[in-house]
Length: 187
Image (tube, rainbow, N blue to C red; front, side, top):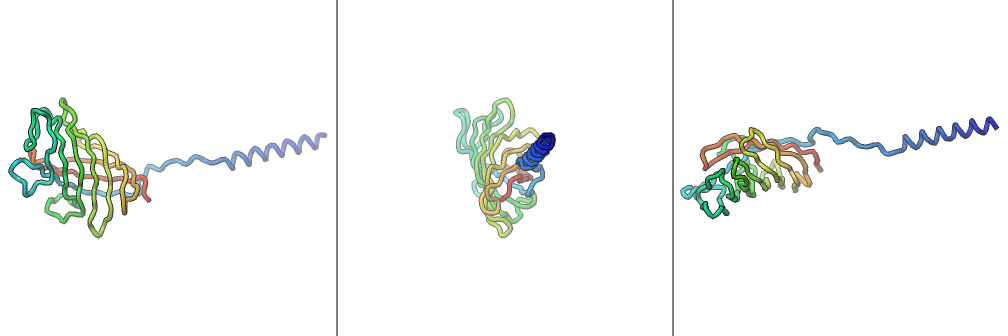
């Protein structure tokens, strides 16, 4: 009888150990990016006098605004579409590796901020495909994070974070953004 109890206890112990080691373990997500890269995009907004060089234009404005000059009150209500060159360095005249295409909406009266939705569309031998971005852009912050929400080609189904930094600002006609992209899901 005692031998049966010992055998049963050993069997239960082994069963318990095999179940606990066979149970699926939870994978922890790595916080290290699978791909990191830096690009610059250059925005030249149409101001009524620069149609030849402009890469963006106001397509919507509040009733008190117009479509050639950004409105007062932190540009609140202006909707701007853009097709800006992307370069590997901060020189506007460097060879573009693609285009930043999308829109931004100035969305607050009391502070200078915008909401962005755009894609980097690549056309170089180095990169093929696109990266898609969306998110709030509190322009007065030195750096701002927006979401990488997808991509195609070399960036198929990419997910991550893009840190934006205003690298240059020349009045209301030109700005350059440095875009540090860290992808955490790469296929």
